[in-house]
Length: 67
Image 1: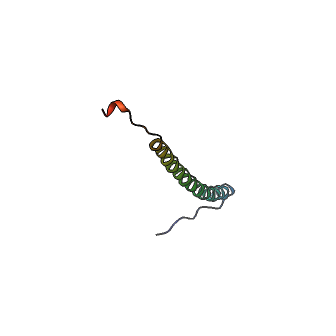
Image 2: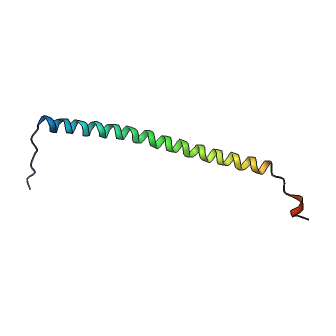
Image 3: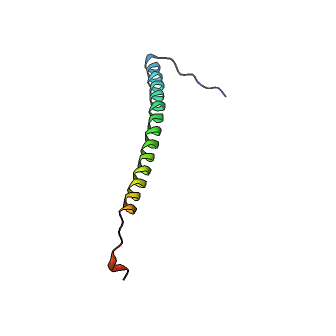
């Protein structure tokens, strides 16, 4: 099994550089996105719990339903 090594032309070197830079940027953005998604998830859970608590604290059952 022999693999053909491509010729190192200026265009191919530029292509490799852009691929490497793109990989680095995607890795960095992926970590930021994961942290942001986790933060937004926790905020959503917190707001949901807060609103549920507010609803139960201020709940007054209707008198005509339990006669």
